[in-house]
Image 1 (tube, one colour):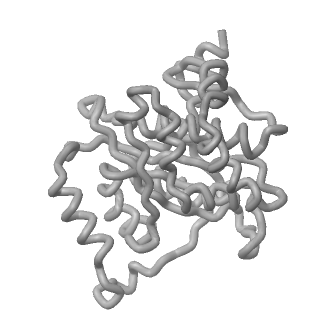
Image 2 (spheres, one colour):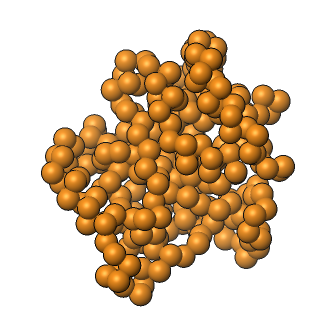
Length: 249
């Protein structure tokens, strides 16, 4: 969903400066607990990102099913918030347990959770900006979500606004990208615990030379993920076919 082939460009920004294009944006990776743990071997083997360089976050689908976006925002990982504020492109990896037979498996944590987070941060960080309306399952939800955002507690809004002070000049949007595929290990706690330990607790001495970290920009990362074949990219609900078909009418 929303995936498209991107052209590489040779130019890159020097460390510490802002980025405005996919060819320039620095990348950070996060796994959404706990199904996202399943992405750790792929991150290491395909992208050269070892476990110690991967961040963790927890967007709970149960909270989203209950419509509790207050807790979803309140529980957002501080490292993820800071990286987004600095203009970094943050890839959040998750594995879905629904529509597995159809080969879809887009987790609610992405199509609802990440979409609401993007909406909230855009409104609070870039109030003067012009952004596409949020879309969930082919329906525009800007009015409903504006109401939800206005009803967030002072403490939650204060948390969002706190990171606004760190936004560099030139950063004008929230670069949040979901990566997903179906899983057959949902609720298999032992599987995820063992996999996490194997990937996160590996010592540097046991690392192979070809596991060395390679800094990649957003465009290069997307190209590699697309080349894997079995992963899907989720940029934003506005790219959903159902919504695009309505717009064309």
